[in-house]
Length: 507
Image (cartoon, rainbow, N blue to C red):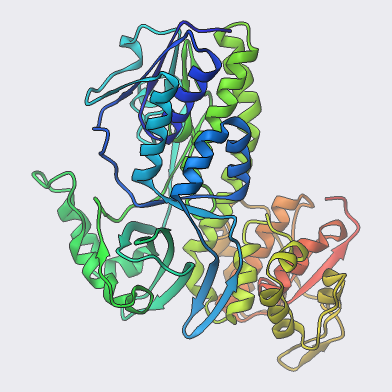
C-alpha cells in the first residue's frame, strides 16, 4: 500500500528511523514525527549496537549506518573479579552516545523529507493520518489507552543508569562487595570522553544501603523531574573507584528502577500500530530497546510496502517480527534472572564465570565461544578439568572429565550414581516453587534434577541445579537429552551442575 499521510508518535530512535524509511519508500507520502520533548532533550548515556543489528541497518539504510558507525566507538569486553580480569575481543560492538544517535537520525529523517514537530503532546485519535506509528516508549499512552492487551512484569532487582567523563578501554562487568551487599556494574565506552555505568543490586542490599529512602525522596511532590539520586551516585563512585579511576559518576535523571518487561497480545488497532518499547521490551543485559525498535521499523516498512491495506500490512508486520521479539525476550528473561542472582557465583574463577556469562541464556554454544574467546575458554576448561583440552570435540572432553566430590570419585561427568530425583517443571528457578525444591534437596547426599525433554526446560533445570549447589553444597546431576549435550557441557564448565545424566529422549 502507499499511504498518503503517516504520523509517528515519539521522536526516539525507532520513531525517527521508521519515519525515514517510510519516506524513502514512499516519497509522495507526508510523514510527520510528533515528539513531546525538545530536539535536544534526552535521558540516558550510551547505546550499544551489536554486529547483527549493524548488518540489518546496513541492508535497510547504509547511509544512516555509516554515520552511526562514524560517531560510535568500538570496544572489547572484560569481566573483573577482584584483581582477576578476563578479556574477550569483540570489536564489532560499538557504543554511541544517545544524543549523537538521535542527532544522526533526526538529520537523516529531515534529509529524506520527514517533518519533525517538537514540544507538543499528541494522541493517535486526534491525528489525521492513514497510518499512525506509536513509538511512544515503555510508558506508551497509546498502548495504555487502547485494546492492545498490554502486560507489564516488574523485575526483582534494582538498577540505575549513570555515566562518567572518560572512555573506558573496554566494556567491563565487575561486582564489588560492600558492607551492605554486592553491587555490579556493566560499563562501556561510547565516545572518546564518556562511558556508561549501569549499576545493579538486589533489594536487600538496596535497602541496607538506605537507597529505598533516597528513591522515595525523589518521588515526593515538588521534586524536579530531572533530579538524580545524588546520594547513591556519591556512594557508588567510591564503591567503583577502581573502575572509575577516581573519576565521578554523572547523573541524568538517574534513579533506582526495576526493569519492566512489556508484552502485548496485539500490536495493532485500526490504523495504529505499536513499535519498539511501546509494544515490547527485553532486559538490557541482552536486549537493546534501540536495536529492537529500529529492526521493528524495517519490518513495518517492508510490510506496508507489500500489503494491499493497513490491516493486512499490520498482520504481516506482526507475523514477521513477533517470533524474533519473543525469542529475544526469552533470552533476556533468562539473562535477567542470571544477573539478579549474580553475586552467588563470584566464587568461580573469572574465566569460568565469563563462560557462565556467555552461556547464561543458552544463546552462545561453548565451541562457538571457544572460537571468539580461545584464551578465556582455554583457561576455563583447564580450571574445570585439568590438562589441555583438545582442539576439537570440546563437548566430549568436558563430559569425560573425572570428578571428585567430597569423599566420592567419578570416572566421568556422566557417571551418575543413585540420587534423589527432583522433577522440575517451572518457569522461574528463583520463584517460591524453586525455593521449595532447594529446601527438598538440602541435607540429601545428592539430587538428580529431571524434567521435560524440551531445551527451555533443560536450561531451567541447570539454573535450579546451580541454586542447589551454591545454596546447599549438595552434589547435583542434571538429566537431559543426549541431543542437548552442548548445553549440558556448558552447564558443567559454568558450575551449574556437577554431573549430567544423558538420556535418549528426544528434545
